[in-house]
Image (tube, rainbow, N blue to C red; front, side, top):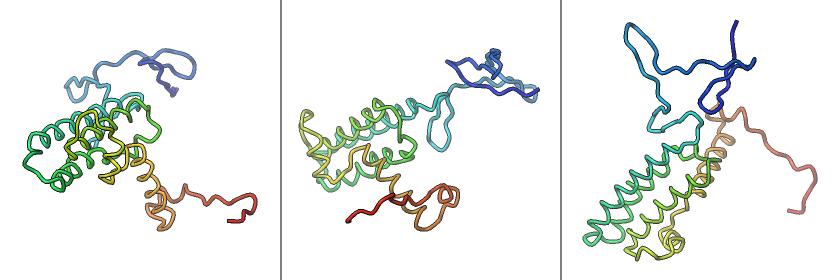
Length: 183
């Protein structure tokens, strides 16, 4: 008899309501392998509930590390050089697999936004209380939420117009208006 399991607060309950035992380790080839609550695949940390909290924590740590490194040498750099470094070290980390963060908790996106705001202040050599929105506009950087939406729009447009990748394009359907508009 096969059982389907659903996860409820770190315990597994099957369809009939039976609680499955908690598994701490697995025996394989005579060795005991311990289980983990997170999985890192291609640089993305996945947790049990797919909240991406651990992934966001790792990205923010990495961005803060590189921001501090740029801050230490900022007085030796031109604004253009500082912007290039920030784009290559910080914005690339904010953009990597950020489409997975679509629909995630606002608190996670706010943490990423703070990391980007700090980087913008360092690049523009501004005071730590300067409004970051103006600095982002001057640097022509999209805020984190808009970066995610832009990436999704580009991927959707590419899949719709070229038909590749097929595993995405087969799920896209052209929306037709139910009534005619003047535009």
